[in-house]
Amino acid sequence: MGNKRKWIILYFVVLAAVGSIGFYVIGGDQWSWIDSLYMTIITLSTVGYGEVHTLTGAGKIWSILIIIFGVSGIGALIRTLNEEFIQLALSRKNTMMKTISKLKNHYVICGYGRMGAVIAKELDEKKLEFVIIEHNEQKVEIIRSKGMLCVKGDVTSEETLQDARVDQAAGVAVVLDTDQENLFVTMSMQTANPDLFILSRCAKEDNYSKLIRAGANKVINPYTAGGHRMAEILLKPQVEDSISVVSPKHSDLNLTLDEISLKDLTQYDGVLIKDSNIREEFDVMIVGIIKETGESIINPAPDTILSNKYTILLMGESDKMDRFKAELPS
Image 1 (cartoon, rainbow, N blue to C red):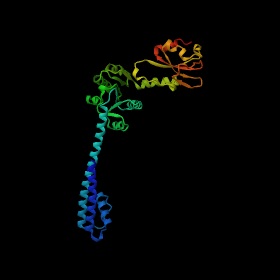
Image 2: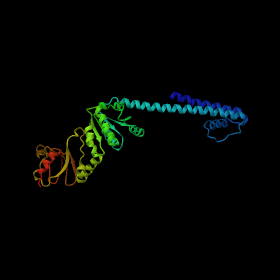
Image 3: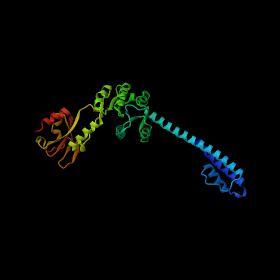
Image 4: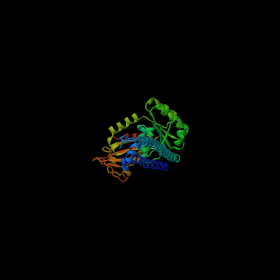
């Protein structure tokens, strides 16, 4: 393609030279070389600035010939540029598909709406391999401009699922616009890869059980989850400021995080964490300490000394956390 473009450029250079010579010869002594070149350029570009000198019949015919050859050359140039653009786009797509074809134990995101974009950003920041399936051309361009892998197509199509290597994926997030779409795609994913971990978005609580029956391992209602999260932050702001727990590999664990004041727990005052036996007795972990000054210590060392002026952050399963709280003074 590059050689073809060079030939077209050479064509215009020769056409400008021949055109200038023609005007110079036709114009006689009245035309200078500058006048001839100028007339050729404005004729080729069809800008219509007017004639340098009054044209004779021969001069007008020469102008028509230059315009015809010029327009033909411009047409060829446009076709060449379009071919190069298409070739470049195909090359980029082929390179991307070749990269996707080598993926294994990756993640698939179905839909690049607001939630899909957030999930993609999180996975990208964690340097995890993932593919986005999206049918909207504009969104596909945005995804690829960010350097993310994307398969353009209908997520319900078997060919699209094969292109995204769903059969080799570790997990998929189904976050399309409607519950009906998510339900259908969840069933398709379950069929394509029975071992696939499927996380599905649910807008209406009534559809939760349907998505579970369709094969989703986890169903998230972003509005309900967001509301619960905001309530936790409102009631326990120090927990939110101190630690964020994410456990995608153990998403079936019912872990909770709570803050417990040691003010009335005198048995722990001046005791090392490793000697407190909190973990051994209640099977919960001290994952943070908030001092009376507001200073936070995340993942404190076992030889950290506890104080009744501290608030500890405990993490554990709900029933075990409840058992520890039952030991607190009323």
